[in-house]
Amino acid sequence: MTSSKSGTRAKAAKTPTKASAEAPVKTPGAANAGKTAKVAKSAKSAKVPEAVKVPKGESHLALVRRARRINRELAEVYPYAHPELDFRNPFELLVATVLSAQTTDLRVNQTTPALFAAYPTPEDMAAAVPEEMEELIRPTGFFRAKTKSLLGLSAALRDDFGGEVPGRLEDLVKLPGVGRKTANVVLGNAFGVPGITVDTHFGRLVRRWKWTDEEDPVKVEAVVADIFPKSEWTMLSHRVVFHGRRICHSRKPACGACPIAPLCPSYGEGETDPEKARKLLKYEMGGYPGQRLSPPPDFPGKPAPALGAA
Image (tube, rainbow, N blue to C red; front, top):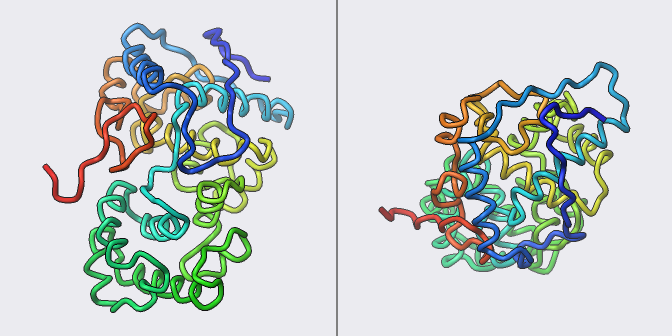
């Protein structure tokens, strides 16, 4: 197993065996807030680590140990990790996930209250006037294509599944506009069925960590599934996405404020100065609102504002 020169010892974290979208996190909210503040403030006194050197020809066992150590550290940093789309049932999560393509979860969350008020069930949505739905979801972008997908999947749910969202991957991917990523989001967070969600953040980070060099999401999913036990898949997805959105950004990672910097083979791709890196932190890590208007009770950040709010 590759070791860090900084001597950071990974802390074993208890992770749930099932991922539930709205299941309460055992860690108290005050403790979560303390962990968040610690990450944000530690940059001032942090020693500059060196990138972990991943040996050529690293064995699969060494890779597994290294990857699982990162996951344990992320579990300590984000004990409150959760899906960042607001939803109350599988249908709302399915629709919100389809809308989230090529936009932010925040914009989806600001848009769906009016959408679900107008079309609360698959039957209602299947009967919608396309032009009226397009206006409701316009803020999410690509609203014509998304309207077509929502009308199609709603009709399929009505006609083929009795108005209920199916709980099997093979059924979900048959719905218009639903691929493996969307299906795994719904399965993991609405049905408690483990799944790995390979979005742009997840793919980017696992490549930075040298878990794989695959670009195809399906291949990335297969590689990561071989590294971690199935019970970890859903929560691992949340933790990696949280880290990618808050600290390990695409263009300018906050390396100097990263709590897993001593474990990262790509350390130094971003800002390494602790104080400058701290200013790059986003959402609750930087003291700003999160992406959900209705976050879980243990979320240490602020709720996002409604659409049009100051």
